[in-house]
Length: 303
Image (cartoon, rainbow, N blue to C red; front, side):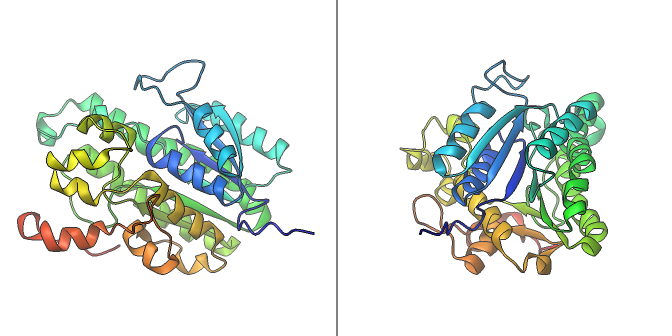
């Protein structure tokens, strides 16, 4: 008789925005820990989203299964309540009402971010669209998914953001969205605490996403060639690092001690001992303190 030692075996997760980047990394690592993972987003084999990138939810789901879990792709526009309701109804029907981990990782705001102009010189509709896409989608998803957790009096909600401090993030609408996502974790934690459900926000460091690799003209196989263009790139991390942080949180029986907090890969790796895909343990906060703080100021105190 063999025992499945994967810590999330039998658990069910929903990764909203699991098509690429951090969402994909989280989905795959939850699968590696044994979970059944519903991978959602707008980019699928049936057609690309307006981002027009090649990654698909089916591709992520295949990686989840290959890692040892079960990946289930469901094309969903999380800005549409009817589609999210249908998604959650499907999960409830297929998993006997079970949902153990909800990851709100919908973003897609990179092409909407204006890094060059202050608020009063930005296009208002573009900025508001960014907020709707990056914040309202999280609210809609939690609204329909949380009842599955509440009915079982257990679970973990993860809000994926950028930065775990109150530090300004360089562009008005970008800053508003990423800060608001942290507040979503705080508010959900307060309301879910009586039900034994934890809610946290989490940030990666310098994330080596598919888009960033393209920006530097490299692949994951030769990513260090990009360091010549930006020395800070040497301290980047793969989406797997973020994924392993979330998987560690999901497997932690004492995760309620962290509810309501904004966490980061650079702190969690020291506590849980996970590594990046290459066995290293990037610590972007330490790199910032040593190399960037004099130029840009402190990264900020954790919220």
